[in-house]
Length: 283
Image (cartoon, rainbow, N blue to C red; front, side, top):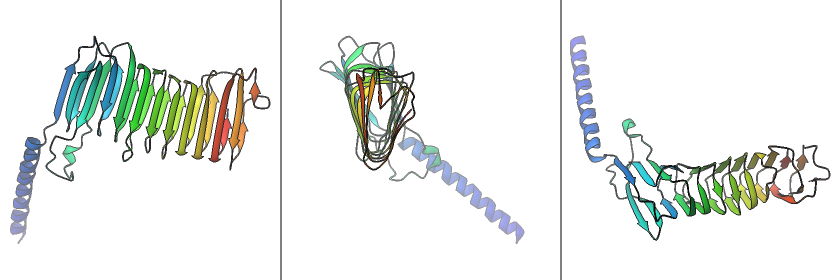
């Protein structure tokens, strides 16, 4: 009986391994990753338009315009009207609706490099995953995270003269950057910033906090939350700043000895904060 059991177990293991090898081999044949590595003539390019589905996207400074991609989608790259278009499509077939293969876990990745120049327009849209925009200078940026997704957008060392951002479930994080004329709005996500200068802007978070730490003392903008707190701290002693704090169903607290009656100096830079169900803290 014992020999029969061992023989049966051995046969089962062998058959299972053969089935796995066959299955994984079939998947490898029918689900090859698409790899793209393309340099683009940058003489006439003034703007960049990226439309991603679910890739990790990185837009960074480089020697020239280039696009690299590795993933399960197809990528269309074109240069029209002085704009570089990078479009991720759904054309690549997935022969299985659900993914039960532990060896098929792979995040699609897209990297776009931009030479050291000021873009006229930067447009980025995505459904899910992480968007990193690093060391980019643009006159106008339009960032749209599609309603059914949950991307996370990071700005690092960017300079934007104008920014329009919409992220229903997509938090935005701004670090070491200079942004003017921003219109930032999230619905179920937070807005965070660190060691940055934000001027002449509006920050709106419906269900989420606004957390601004070690900000440039010249920052002046409006911020509002429906359900969430607003935190603000400075990188240095504030000068010429006026605080207009309006918590409807919450409290406001200024923990900064430089302010007297919510004002320091001439009050030229105005911070106007509103919360409906949340508190406001200035540090």
